[in-house]
Image 1 (tube, rainbow, N blue to C red):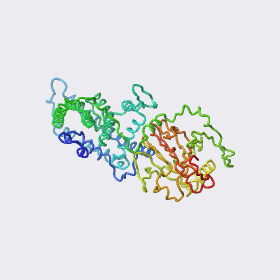
Image 2: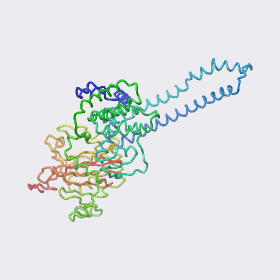
Image 3: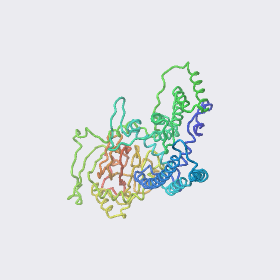
Image 4: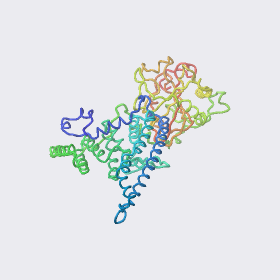
Length: 559
């Protein structure tokens, strides 16, 4: 196996002489196996848990098909065992009495007819054909290779943001490792471990992206697990110990650790001594080390790759790691809880519980804003219409890696309950929430490790698509949590330096603009990756126009 072509174009001249870059053939095979007919990129499954959940249906059908195949094979093998025992019984003893014409006849018949029927039986091929035909029927509903890539990147994202131990993840534990301290972030009721092949695929996705930091962390675990089960083979596995060593050796070489790449390559050769490519690589690694023998200095540690578009990464991830915990908020006397009516007759008999979380910017949480049945209905209305979420980029909207979710827009004509919801939002905020002064309700379902990195809700460019409504910028955000999650998924306000955990049925409200119409830079916020659970939210974005007498303008910057 030679290096992937894209990597060959990037390597240094010395690399061109090396036959490195493991497993290109395996990668091609994986891609071919994962592509189903009729699948477009916009129909990915990994970016919303609702879509991932739908994949359970095809797998149940595959289980049914496999059960039929196994039963057929068990019956076939029982019959083969019967034939074997029957013939074996005739060979027991010191001599087989071929003098008996009946036995002599059956011996001739077995060798001329029975054994041929056994060896060339079509039963095994008929069993596997039924399984393959059933697979083809459901193949178009299966995840594509892009889904596997997206799911693998999600695990890397969780690893980074929550500082998770990859070794712990492989054993089903969600543990944060800081130095020698290990903290359980989440303890699942049922532990689910990853196989060596599972870890190999995550490492291979990172490797194919040229991300050797994550490739090494996952391939190291894969190699360790493969070593522990060497000699065994699982039918479903694509990778092997040799494959993992091959990828890992080249990843270390790319990261600048030639000596360890050499060590791994020598180990590979112990398992596959006839591999001429690896033998040549070892010679070239040894030559490179000999040429560097006069150079001294500490080995440069492998660093996590930078994220060019995210300048606030450390603050963002630190807030996400709190999981929404605010242990000192109660010490701030200006923050309080109250029953809110906003002087609205609509709320007099049923005030809403308000919790003021922050003053500048002003952020409040309204508890139990919707009921369980309302939240369930909203999720149900949106589910059939979910599409990959996009972000504004100049005058266009596009899918991006830093926002992993699917969303749908619901007009209030869908159901009278949505009209009632709008009326409640208007009463609570005192704002006009009817189009075009507010957008339709956007319902969002986050995917595997679903997140939305730091961003503003209001437009920061005059060419933004938000202005197409001709109703000004987004003056306020009203976000409703439609579900609970088991861990992660907090809303982090970067410059305000606090995060809000997911509180089912509660609504979060904040002003995006100052009264002068200028954007409030302190509202930079993010949706932290969902560690465990299925996160749904609904956003109501309210625009400037139509609010002139409800939220009067001011020229004071602090207002």
